[in-house]
Image (cartoon, rainbow over all chains, first blue to last red; front, side, top):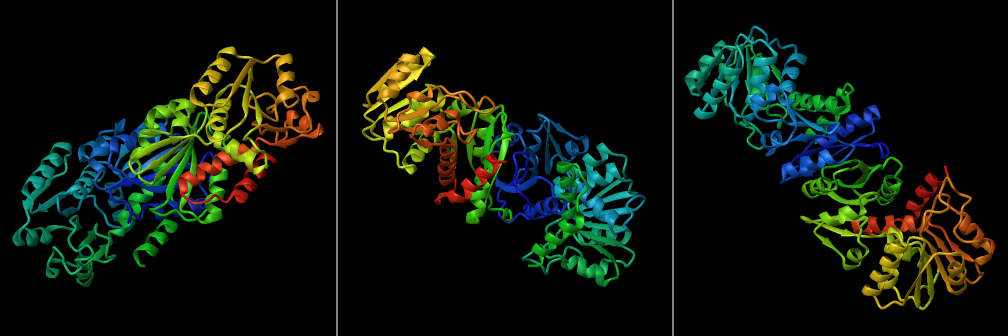
Length: 286
Length: 286
């Protein structure tokens, strides 16, 4: 860490709990690599409105990463939210700009960047999204609004969430949306058609690492498969897809890129991605 | 600076402006010397209530130093204030303890500690205080409540402030209080009687370093003379007193000790005074 001065800018992750957050390690590694006069800490928060009011009142408090359970509530207490993030209905980033708080999301853009960095084309392709929760909303709206997929296929077992996301996506974009209740049949059919598969549920996350939503034999070698789960670094779903010859994109790339985009909003300079990835991987492979 | 973790505790100075505050340098030097998981920044603040609400809501935000112009306003937005600090009417410290904000002052105790560290006895002595402003209130109440001077003599040119402080001190303690409008005659008389002189006005502060409130010939060798001004490190008043053979206590010792006491409230461990003094002197002798 560099020396603190009276100009040092503060950023923080707010959530509850935050004891296992990797964000301080990643962001501070970025500041150190570029010798930026910033410091990033973790704050457990219950009263989101008061916390955001404090950020607004405290000079040199530059921004927040917002994590569970505050992503929806935080959006209510900022001054401006981009249209796509209002459609998503949650934010993961607050930037303190002058006397205003700007809210935005980097989860969806982080996923899109992870796909692009891996050389996966989204435009003109049929994309299967498994899951219709908060992460799927963020990624789905980003794909529908910021890219041009041929079709978004949504599968989930929760009909209310599924139909809600599908309706919101149809209302907010021209992207063709196909939604169906997740069953063995609809899953097999969708995997038979999709060129890119994005897994947006927590299935397979540590400690239940032996679980996968997709039977291995459903994968086809020409598919690209992306899993937002990043503990373990390679989930069973990704290992199965890799074994079947698919191109796989690990979830850690989305996690890294949402932080990279936050870093650039907070500091205004290009993030030192390699230094940030190195620290993240050190923590995830301990 | 040590590495930031998710447990790192945050402290900050709030004021307006704060760009020249020495507090981040002093406190961070203390954390570094003891390898404590703390970081201390500077925040320009206009809305004190919102800033304190933010401290309350942000976990790991451990405490604040409060400086001009917020010392009076801050007292209104904390949960508990010690009786002596309520009497003084201002605080310079907020400690975030559980879900409560505790307000207190370390300016008076810092002055008392500076006197004690210099071997100056207060108990049983006649103390002359020049000035009846905020610093004089803090020091006067601390001397009257936490020590046992034979008499406190107050001189100021502002009658309202003078009579107000004298009345408040008489109401709140058993210490004999003598107050008089500052004139050449009352000044000479008071300096003829006082065993300890405490200068609590800004006269002699950089850049007007050639000014002193006290004609040099009024000092007597048996007196101890303390100046709260610390830029320059030795004011004309102190240089004159030293030349007359007095024991002199520089204001930097009060500034250091108010920070030392804050440090101990924030961290709960004895402050590394020498490390903090070293950094302070480095900044003041640049």
